[in-house]
Length: 480
Image (cartoon, rainbow, N blue to C red; front, side, top):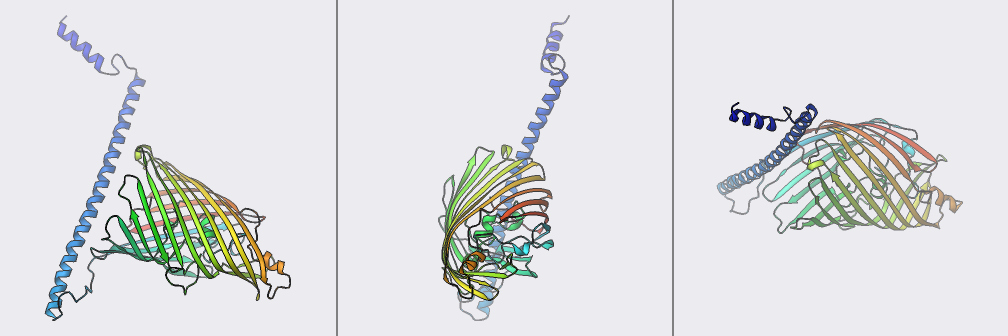
């Protein structure tokens, strides 16, 4: 036999799995392993190209904006010179940059075992917007958003919100702010109307929340979300570890300050954010923040108590809130498309000291109020396969309030005013929530959620909601 032929046959059989040394099961396992490796390599390469494309598009937009701005300045200079106006005196009076416009449609079908109009949390004064969504079909926070670079110095954004209130559909300007683009040394700023940077969830618009409703702590301490007219200055450190330090001053028109006639500085806030990556599969962020409010005649949400009367409270005094937040994200090999897990928690502590004017069916009493309150929530959301997620959340509150009657006013029994005010301690409100959602694409989501709400004493509320979220138009990336 030819020795060369024999050597070639031996080499072939030793190098070809499945001919001599591999079973069919081994060959299938090897094929699957190679296919999985190719899939991972393809997804990593696709993500890399998407990141490069996004950066390239941003660069092109910036260059186009600068070019258009220069053309506009040159044209304006020619026009003003022809009109006889001295150079440098005429402002730019037109803007040729088309803004990015998006609409987020949100709505829900809600069912409760307790009357949502009677909603109250013992020990806490609630803002007007705090509480469950209206029962039945309702319009949630539907947003119309427009944003663009004004020029090379400023970026502007506004969000107009529409939602069903207690009696009618309400329209409000949620945010309308301007960011300067040329601040040096890592500094950033914002002025206008915007959501505060305190906590984690506060600055995130509702369509990007992982649950249909806000945590109980946000409902009681911030009236759902705190946004106001104000100014912000922050600094991003030039370090590998994400480090952001910022401060804000607000007019104090909204809860927890709540006086529409106040001026800038009645609410101040400060925050610290740190975060980073652990390997390629894990990322985290932690924060500490505080909000100091000078409340003047802050009106709480009125409700009907068990006796059938209508009540309301007005608080004047100091309200100091402190928040600690933590978020952990996991995605295998840094790719969240297939599976990912998000853990999120925040702890709130508030001190309030002042006077409360309590009224019930025309009778008024003046109360002295000194409250120490705390609350926290923790949630986990797991995407177990592409486009499908489920999540669990737990909420807990505690109020340690000292109350006394300064002037009983129209109340014959002073203790009745204390009891009906809703500020007496009555157990620890808590709630369990579970949600399941499906996102056919990044622009649509359907969510089913159940809450076992025990925030009202001796009245467990079984709450169901079926929510839709649909986005059209341009839409930027969400917060971490």
